[in-house]
Image (tube, rainbow, N blue to C red; front, side):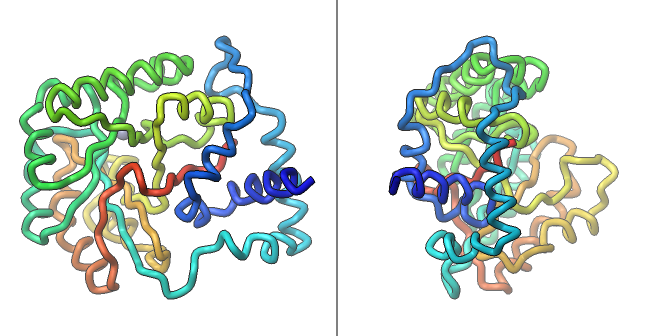
Length: 281
Ligand SMILES: [Zn+2]
């Protein structure tokens, strides 16, 4: 019975945004304790029935205001340190080196979720990132949604191929990952547990600079998007460092100065950073 209540509270917590950043490793492990049968035919977008049920329970609890009382221990503590993780996707590219210069000027470390195909072209950028103490994460090999999301195995194979590529450059095994386009509607409980077999830790974001959505985004839009909702105590900010992301580069000092003035500490994502995952669909 107690176990049931624990699971229930935990699943409910999956639907409260800030909770992800305070999730502990033991909670993550407990999610996959049961041996879920993986159906190899399953597409990532397949619907998982019990997730629907959990969502139903959560909605009911939320409307009866029980969620608050049950989740108090999972809510972010007040007055705790404010941390921001700057993350740059889709590199490395030539522009990544310019981003690196800005970060170095401010003596700030960031996390780069890189694409294998680009790592192959710019291995020296990976070396530079490591030299300067930045973190590297996996962001698939091809960034081709159609291929990556055709089945679980394609996704895993691409992450491992990129992991190997980086290992050959840095002699470090990277296991922090980010889903291209984010995990929403792509990750479910079965797939999550499958990824745990490979020790992958998943990081979505809770603020997007919007630089990836449209090439039309001007610098003001990027700055505004990157700095709104800045009342959160933990922020994972999504940005990009492709060749074309010059606007992001130009506005980066303003973003850094904004968060510095608000008292945020800049940290990198590593194995000990609690996962941050969009709610399972
Ligand atoms: Zn991407």
